[in-house]
Length: 212
Image 1 (cartoon, one colour):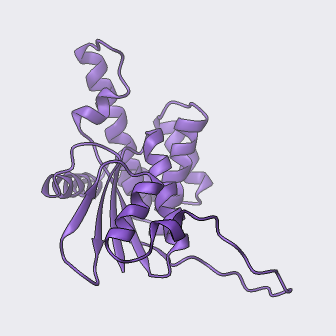
Image 2: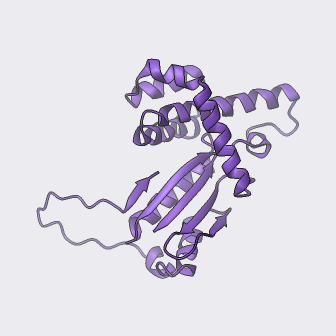
Image 3: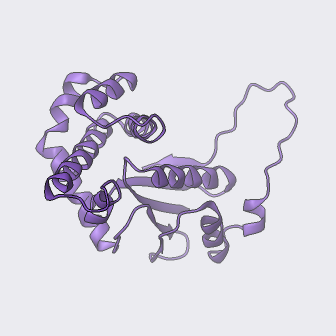
């Protein structure tokens, strides 16, 4: 089984693409894949959203925006992993694709769209539990020597306890990792999938995908 930790900037376009690449890989593999999207907040992450020569006030403002976005994501996760994942996707779509600015109002709107308990969500966004979860994520990133997003740490649990660090989380790079671990050939994973004709069955085959 593959276990993947993807460290992401919840407001960044490259991280959206990396998440999609991991989901595509999971759909193609026969082995079970578990993954966790871990929010990362560093000076490098903040710098990507700043002008060329930002002021200290601009740096602090962007840090606060990213921090609040992460707390909102953690608050959504407290109501279930699937709802948290849905919230993250909707937040990324709103900010990256629809060019909306992250704000408290946007977070509440997304929470409603995800059918979250709004009162609980509001409380959790500023809770000590959410802040501690953020600190735990940053500690994990430090232990795994993560300095940029997106970055993935991939474990082949059937072979070794040692993880592989991947800073360029493209689909091709993920396929190369799978080939090096003897999981599947790059050629088979890169090939376009073929599907059997639909003979009227109502059964839908789901990929071996599990969100931690």
